[in-house]
Image (cartoon, rainbow, N blue to C red; front, side, top):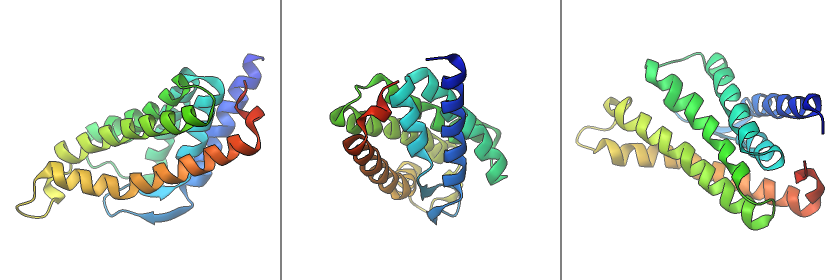
Length: 170
């Protein structure tokens, strides 16, 4: 494997994530949506390892800021974009088999959920309905689109592994 090939694969995964970013099944009012954007980032993490996945996720997060064009708070740059998408790369620490793909995807997306939860509690609490605990609001809000994204990611990645396991070999 050459560095050029590895960088090319990372760039292609970021590009695919960017394309999928615009193909949304639904979008939430203060950000967040259901799409396939996480799949290429998780895939490159499984294929090339955690450092490649973290890098790809963080770059995609930066590009998402440009695409979305809305920053509600400066800390949102980190919590909603850099950290939230960069953490997807930890999937690369898990084995390249069906169980590893399911567990790695779940743990990675739970990491993303954690950063979005923190953002919701500390930056978006004012959007919670009057009298509702910001933690509950953030769990419901972020869970409503991340749970479907988790299910989609697991289905797509396990199907890809079942039909073409060699793609996961670096």
